[in-house]
Amino acid sequence: MDIFNKEKFRQKIKEHEFGSILIGENNVFEAEYSSRDYIVMEDGSFAVVELKAQKKPEDSNMITPMDLNTKPLGDYFASTTLVLYHAAYPDTELKLNADFRLSMNGVSFINTSTSGTTAYFPNNVNPKSSNIGSPSSTTVVDSPIYAYGNYTYNLLGTNGVALYSQDYQAQISLTYKGTTPWPNPDYYVTYELGYQWN
Image (cartoon, rainbow, N blue to C red; front, side, top):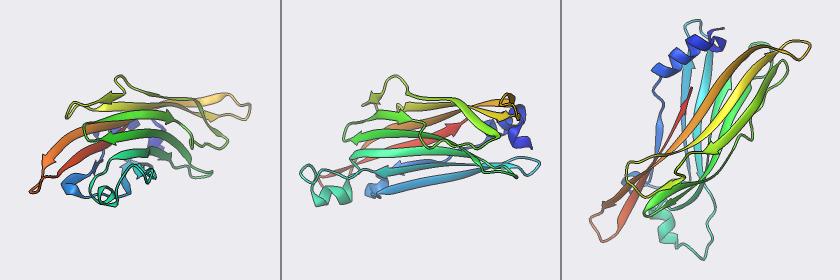
């Protein structure tokens, strides 16, 4: 299957335009966001990539009901997942999780993990790791910060030795888009959350 051909997959994913999520655009706030893309190879094999973000519950003493409706400020959980479909056994899922914070004047990543990454014999994902890029926060408009996940997918033989391996990297980007004047004295803030796999 072409999805497991290193060169073909890298070329296809290089040509792929991944979506992004705008948080707070036009003063619209949602508690959950998601974006999904399909990477379809020439032979019909495919992978699904998705990005999800969810606002964490707020401390009721720190924010007013009006703020909840108009400002996307606070802490969020985000994840991006690459699902490799197998014909004869359960699918392999590579997952990058990131906690991030949105404020009136910037963005920051707080934590990352690869929790939720799953593979079933004869598939294996090892090693896997995640980290936050430098800098981990910014107040500069249109200057993204990044969280990364690194994975090695292995197809194991009956003796547990890898017959085939392929490396993958996940990236979640977070961009502070700035405040925009509204017709009243209030302002609204916009952020962009993006992702990439290679």
